[in-house]
Amino acid sequence: MLKSYEVTIEGDRIKWLGEKPKLETIRGIIVIAEESSSASMPKRTTPAHLRGKVKILGDLVSPIE
Image 1: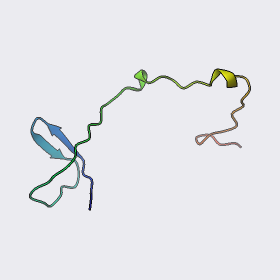
Image 2 (image 1 turned 90 degrees about the vertical axis):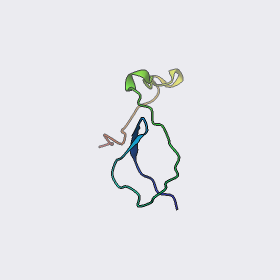
Image 3 (image 1 turned 30 degrees about the horizontal axis):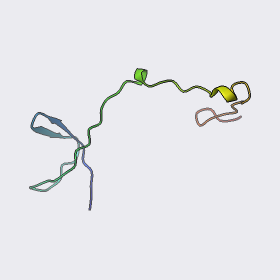
Image 4 (image 1 turned 120 degrees about the vertical axis):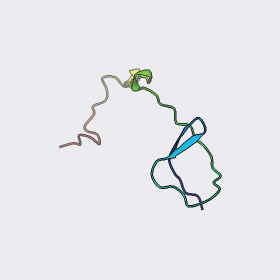
């Protein structure tokens, strides 16, 4: 059975963020989550062939009233 745990690793030290497994030996896979700024991501725009032809009626944040 797979179970996930969150840790931070600095050098050779591991800090458990939350629950720690009750095992003597642990084998795992490390996934590196790189921090990125939203400034580097391009802003989404309306495709040129749809500009002026599409009317947005609502979305998940502000639905149609």
